[in-house]
Amino acid sequence: MANPMKAKLETELQQALQELKKLDERLEQKAEYGPGKGDPAIYDWEFTLALRQQAQQKVGTIRHALQRLADGNYGVCERCGKPIDPERLEIVPLAHLCIECAKSSRG
Ligand SMILES: [Zn+2]
Image 1 (cartoon, rainbow, N blue to C red):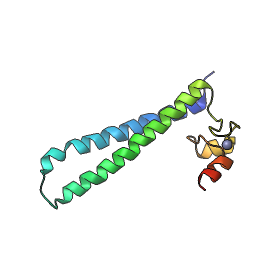
Image 2: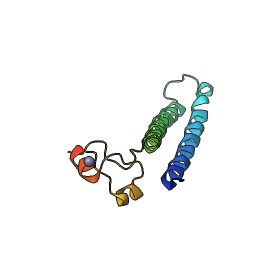
Image 3: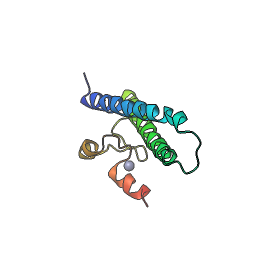
Image 4: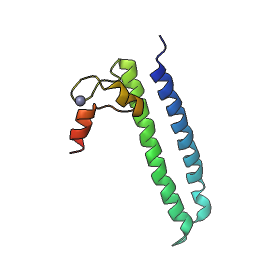
């Protein structure tokens, strides 16, 4: 049986990987900027690097969710082991904590 969530996550993963590739291409242009002090391009590069780290993290989160799906643990809270509300998963497909644990982990 095809899992619609798997297709959804795989689409998200493809998008995230494309984003990562685009950012990598932008970062590769660094060499052209030179090490000039106060070069605004350097700040742009730093910004792109930060975006890349976010994209990388997202790829990791999606891969983690796909792994959980493969293991049959998807939709189960990682902390308390209770099923995560399907409505919550609809809004936050990458959620790995139920709403109660997510609330308490936020302190
Ligand atoms: Zn929980």
